[in-house]
Amino acid sequence: MLRIPAGNAELCAQTFGDPTDPAVLLIHGATSSMDWWEDEFCERIAVEGRYVIRYDHRDTGQSTCYPPGVPPYSFADLVSDAVAVLDGVGVDRAHVVGMSMGGGIAQRLAISHPDRVETLTLVATSPDPGAEDLPPMPAEAIAEFSSAPRPDWSDPGSVLAYLVNALRLCAARSVPFDEAGARGLAGVVLARSRSIESGTNHFGVRGAGPGRGDLARIAAPTLVIHGDEDPVHPLGHGQALAAEIGGAELLVLPHTGHELPRRSWDTVIPALLIHTRRSAPRRRESTMTGKPFSGFAVSDTSAAKAFYTDVLGLTVTGDDMLAIDLGDGHRILVYPKPDHQPAGFTILNLAVPDVGKAVAELAERGVEFLRYDGFGQDEDGVMRGNGPDIAWFTDPSGNVFSVVQE
Image (tube, rainbow, N blue to C red; front, top):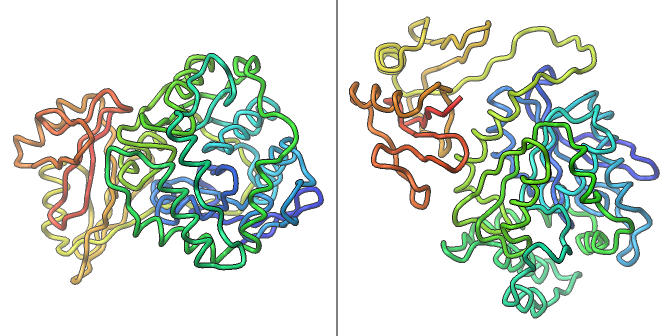
């Protein structure tokens, strides 16, 4: 963990991946520490060649905390904190991803510090939460949030139940709520928090977020990601953002509320990786001059090599230890592991000019494509019209690959 000075506060930050890779700065929402950007989410982005940075806001996690009440800082300070984090890790420009209140911070960062923002990704956020022309929070959601029992902040069990219930209220109603996963994540957040109650200071932060009229000034390529069942900022807020920021793209997540659930990651992460390829960040000089590479395990390298070369048409060298050549000097190491267990996520995304054609060719070679509930895939297994076209399959060891539209 890193300790970064930010004005009269000290922020706790963490990085994943190689500092020479393009930087991705993750900014979460009100009351949220860095832990809400789950470790596996960060690792999956980093392994694809991104330098991922997450941090605790003031009054969360291990950053400076103040007594609950009126916070001695403003919204502008929270924006300045993001700049301080970039300075603290030695990054001049980053691909900035903001969720909920973090999306408001990210918008203001792109407007007031355009030289620090390479691309912008806005998740479950709004151009103006109180605007009369945007859909309000549903009455049912207002009633549920208002009637939610307040915790005994001195009782960890009470606080844990409160956090899990807050996640439940933000989640989509059309799919089962993952209570076990929510409880595990909330436990991590609680264990790392100096003063969990201090996070409520965010609701009293002075100063407004970005002015809606300023959105047209955002020059960074922008991707808006929004759930179709968001009870806090209904979908119209995401649609308005995409319409008011020039050239912005909108990715609607089905069966998703005010959240970024694990079931959405196989859609969100490829979209984020494609979006952050749009331009190369200009960063400070570094002594890390070698070309980074990632790797994964297989149970049988002979079968893996035959599949990667004969079926996928990739260039592979080696026998016991394989190297997949991705071009431009980049490679992926593939190593044998007898007790290999496939990961529960996509480990390699293959960008192609025509997903439908790629799927047809692979199907002719015996590849069977995976199907996921709620993803709206067509008869060939391709998910279309909700971000980049994408289809998933496995290698002989059960590792999940995808072909995704360039």
